[in-house]
Amino acid sequence: MATRNTNEKVFRKFEKEVLDKHHKTLALWRRDRRNARYAALAQFDCNVISTVLSPPDPSRIGQLQLLKNLEEGLSEAFRWLHDGSQQFNIKPTDDPNIIEEAGKFCQFAGKYVNIADFHKMYGRKQVDIEVDEVKKRVRFVIRNNIQSVGPMLGMAEQSHRLGNLPLVSDPSSQGDIGEKLFSLLRGIEYKYMSGHIALPDVSIANDENIKRQFELAIPQEPLRLNDHEDLGGFTVSEFDQFYNALRRWSFCCTFGFLLSIMELGKQQWECAPTQCIERSEFYDSLRKLTGLPDSTLFSIVQRLSYDRRTGWPDLYQQPLFCGDKTISWSASVVQNSRQLRNMLKLMSRTKELQNHAATLIGRREAPMLQEISNLFSHKGKTENKLNTPISKGKEKGEIDILVYNKQFPDEILIIEGKALLGVDEINEVDAATKEMQKGQNQLSKVKRILSKMNIEEKS
Image (cartoon, rainbow, N blue to C red):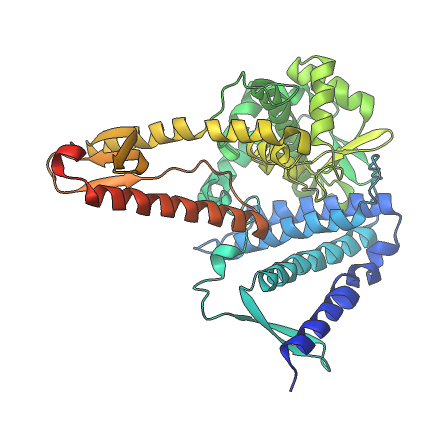
């Protein structure tokens, strides 16, 4: 019978010799690396668009899971395709064979991420393993003391927001929004360049009608930071100007892609919305769309450039691929990103910006608590107190929000607030879980102190 040590040894051997090397046996790995990178982006953009616009099942779980897998697969694929150099060159191609190979490459990458999550859970003693060395199989078994594996498995960028998008939650709106956009974009003579579509004039992205339809289709999720807050070289307002312009640019290319397929008979590999723009043209276009000075544009582009400054690059936090002569990006990644949240996450993972990011993230707690308090006052007609200190003997605590209603004098609601950023992958989920457990301990302490206080002390 195999012992735990034997299982562990074989398990690590499979991990090193099979799992971590399999992507190098796939056809895309033998292609020109520049073409391979483009093909990975192009197949992702095309697949995301077709998935979002496909009729969803009533629960949308299947659609969300598919998008989650596409996103995680692309992110992992690019970690493999990045050689660590500062310049990240991408070369468009309209070869359908390369695009197909990229799809298979990213599909395996998505499976790899799921398996890797279980490997991490095994390292944290959240699951056990059963190893069959002959068949080269590993089975992960949930431990009895673990109530649920689900909360430990991170969610992809769109999984927790996609269901609220009008294009998904209300499929009937697709036709209305789509037709209005098509009528605005039909007159544009799109350019087709080596398999991807390009705008002849990016100023269409500043058209007020385009802005209006874009907000209806993909509304922003505001993160409560003041416009003047410094993000380390540029303000929140400047970053929003830049990124929203890039989102609308991508949005116009996405609908140009749909027009090209539906009305011009183009194939997907001939008109992908993936963008690969000459550097000078890129900066000229963003200067025209935003009015921002060159120094600010350069700072933002440098921050968003895909590299290894964090040791574990994330496609949604660093969506721009800056080569010797071009700047490239995935239209779907850019237009669907929660950009300010991802910027704060990138800053928190960058050594020289970590402390500043922690300050900015922490500042969100006060307005968050105030908003929750206002909600209770408005909806529940309650009276509330914020940040109320309490003590009994040497034990001290603080109640973030104390909610009470005079009609029910024997009941109060105690709320502990934590200003956390949304989580995407298992390490972030683990850290967020620990922070929430810390909050639960603080609530327990508050309840313990309150139980010892008399009526006069509580009043």
